[in-house]
Length: 265
Image (cartoon, rainbow, N blue to C red; front, side, top):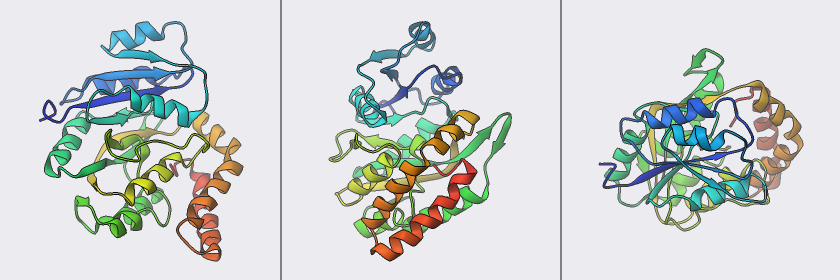
């Protein structure tokens, strides 16, 4: 099935992540194998050997121009109809690609697919937290128990109260109009991209099983704290595109409370 609906994992790697090896191992051990590409603007000694160890390709670009540029370059490396931008710190469970492509096969008009996810915190795996429960509730506002939605209203509903779509689990149809990321945004470039896709033709699909693990670690929490001012501004910008200003400000304030968990994205 995956051979018929070709799919690639592209890892937009930044810096020297101590978790990249585990990520690549999880991609190599998929039950439905897909090509793996590591794309980076910050190569380091030993990266080429590490990538080769897992049968992956390495694509290097310059300059280091920010996360949006990195993600757009990563998208351009896929030579298949479908691509997952696999986050370098995260883990993909063995059935991730197979289950995602099975959903793709069920709906020819699909343009964006994603799975449920859990969290990895040290040696602990968490499939249910208050934040994960809220996100799943928000997703059901749009999907209403269905695996796929194609109406613009339904796609927008699941994005109106925040971005519950877990970016590391998203698989995109490369040819879909609007699959690109704004390079002027630092935090909400994924939410913005999904919003632009939502108003175009094409279906969004949701696999409700936990098929990947987002890693929560000190490095990401520190980065999150540094960026909180940027994040707050970008959140307000997104809510203002969906709601009148007073409501947008209330939602942005409520959304900011999730920052303290370190797992809001």
